[in-house]
Each structure stands twice: as structure tokens, then as C-alpha cells.
Amino acid sequence: MSCICVLGMHRSGTSCLTGIMQGLGVELGEVFTENLYNKRGNRENSRIVILNDAVLNTNKGAWNRPVVVSEWTPEQAHERDSIIRELERRETVHWGFKDTRTLFTLPFWLEIIESPLFIGTYRHPHRVALSLNNRDQSPVEEGWELWRVYNERLLELAAHYGFALTDFDQPDDDYLADVLEKLIALGLDPGLAARGREFFDPALRNQADSPVDNVALPADVLSVYERLRNYHARS
Image (cartoon, rainbow, N blue to C red; front, side, top):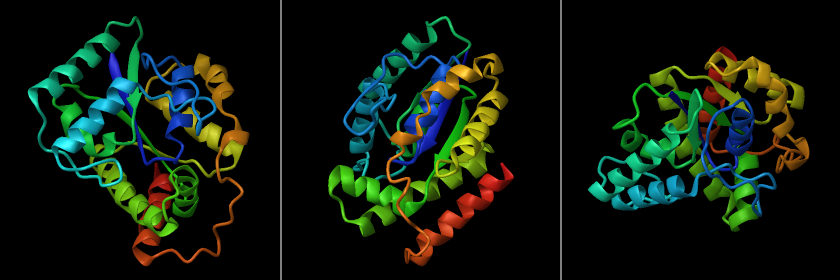
């Protein structure tokens, strides 16, 4: 069995990408299939989310104050190993998981997962900031800065491991074609593509109609966005 990990920031299409991936046969274990801000669920394993929060806290971080982790407790490692053993017991070729915090807790997971596969997703910083504002009432400017921190880390990992990115803001047909092509390239069954497609519902794409062309983003945020777009065009 091989592990596929979805990487990306909050409100950037990670749930959609993971749901499509699940349709192509990837075992996720017990995940949320519906919640307030994701009508088809965020496809997150609650044990993984709780554990990632705990590891970030051990490193004096949090989801909105992220740090790349370098230490964890024996109890946290034991819980991680238990989660992985449970997923590996499922009778599938691939298992996987998604939690946005994994961008920063990845060293913790790589201590035990051998040769994982990755796929990443990103979205325009203003749409992400608006979505965070809608969910958490956080200032848009703070959302831009948090977006920059997460996506600089995404670019760093993509460059290091050479994995593909997809753009959640693409037109519907382009997005689906891009995602399916990149998931199939990871070894998933092309015969299940129709099942994967069924998960995508463009009506659930939050902030999709929010205009972004005239938004005056900070220069460092805009620079990261352009680097993401260039990387995506090549991947």
C-alpha cells in the first residue's frame, strides 16, 4: 500500500480534491462527510486533525500561527502509528489523508511513512481570505498574510518532492480534467474517474464569483501567487 497526502491551505480546495481522490479508490478511514462550511464534508479524519493540533501546540504553534514542527511526544508518535496501522489494514492499494496543518507537521508523519505520494492545491489569496472571514470573521488582511505563510510552505515542499499542484479557481471542466489527470498519474484507477467526478459540485465552491482582478494585494502575497501559477503551469 502507498500513502497519498493532500497538501494545501484552508479554504483552497483540499476537501474537494480529497473527495475526488476518495472516489478513485483511496481509503481515508472515518472522515467527516458533512459539516457547516463543507456541505459534502471536509473529508478529514478527526484523529489526524486532533493529533496535528497537538503536535503544533507542542511546538508552540497553531493552525493560524503555523510553525514547521521539529519535536513531538512519545504519546503523539504512538497515536500516529496507531492511525497508520488502522488505515493500512484496509484492503486497498492506496490510503491517504488530508489536513491543512500537515503542511507544517509533515516531518512528524514522515518519521514513519515511507515514500509517500503528494498532490497539492491552491487558490487566489483574496478568495481564501474572504472565505476565512466568512467562517471565522478574521480580517481579510490577516487572511492574506496567513495565505502567504501556508503557500510559501506549499511551494517549498512541492519543489523539494516534485509533486503536482492544481488550481481550485480553474473553470469547472478544466479543474476536473487537471485533478483527474494528476491523480491518475499517481497510480489511481482511471476506470473510477466517473466516480471521482461525481464528488465535484461547483455550487459548493465558496467565493467562486468574488472578483479578484482589482484587489490590491501586498507585493509579497502577489509574488507567491505568481510563483504558484507558474509552478502549476509546469506541473
